[in-house]
Length: 366
Image (cartoon, helix red, strand yellow):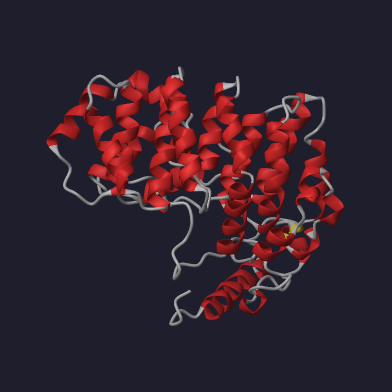
């Protein structure tokens, strides 16, 4: 952390504004359990109130055995209050009734990733969610994985610049507090570390029979905080045999996102080779072009613009619309168009206030 950055002062200002909104009746009914609790303190760093520490110390048999009662949910709030009920909801994901499972996933999203903002209970849920997604008997496994990907990433800024598409966490001097008041930086870091610890579970899902699971598994892996070499190798291995266009695009963007978080010159060179090669599939070339643009500050070569002109069609945009990276830009099918406009001409696209709100909707993007 930057020693010159007073995060406690930031949180105090944030809680003052939250308290003002609370007293003015501007917060959701039932939010924070009816009162504004003690939400976070820098003094909690490295203690049992630090979700990163709690997860790192948790025995793996807790996750493997779905021992929900051994997780200290009550220490960590989400926007609607303490997190004890999250355990019960996770247990309901093992229901044999598919509509029930989908309803539970959507409800969990609203609690632990409210308005797209990750919370500590969401991080605590990650190891359980990954094990549920790996179980072929679980319904809606891709949506389960999508929830993992959501709680492991910062809220996406729709006024983004070149490179921001692939951001995962926050910089050392950049701090964020969601509506629950617990430092989002810690929650995201804990979720990313949990993905890293269970990278073997997720990489195995790259070979899942369901292409939606393969697609979102790549998205989850792209948020990992470590084990990068092995993850990248697994993504490349899958790309060599993948037969579904949208999944190929997800694999390429996952490789790019890992290179954004963990700088890799080899990945930059590989991206350029991909988008410049007319023999590669269009979705690979476009995804590689997006990755390259986000990884370097070089002037955009005419050959890249030509490659995009050749490859970006309405059919391709529709195919890529449901990719997680595109839905974080636009839930409604224009993600690729908006991304390219933002990269090439940041002032060209001005989203209306209502459109911005839709992009941060409480409803999950699936």
